[in-house]
Length: 173
Image (cartoon, rainbow, N blue to C red):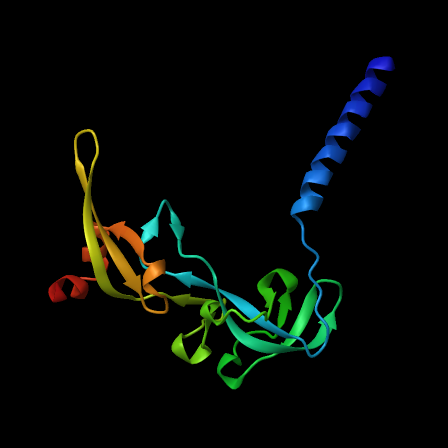
């Protein structure tokens, strides 16, 4: 019985330690009715990287007014007519309070948001090229500027995949 009590005490200590780690990282988000919030949408590209689609960071569209609070973590938003296919109730993790950094907000007219709150990123131009030498082969990469992003947010992509998916970019160069 003593061994069982020792094991229980150690388990309880480990659980409380893990809970304290999780509590530090968790942020309590709460919105009031008539607050303005941004809605997170996920970019999807045609290029697959390590089996995951959409390497680019999430973007926010909006700003939308909160019309009703539903439960502890869900909110109903007042959406425009263009987003009539999207259900108007969202989890708090999909929302971000409007603070005033307009560079992260993409106007809804500039992109076509699907029903699953994603949009397709389209490459606009190739900014740079580089070839990385591995042990016995070279990997060619190109720096790609995407449609709704600034030059600072351009990403390095494999040249072969970009040629396969977007050949029109290489006709310009």
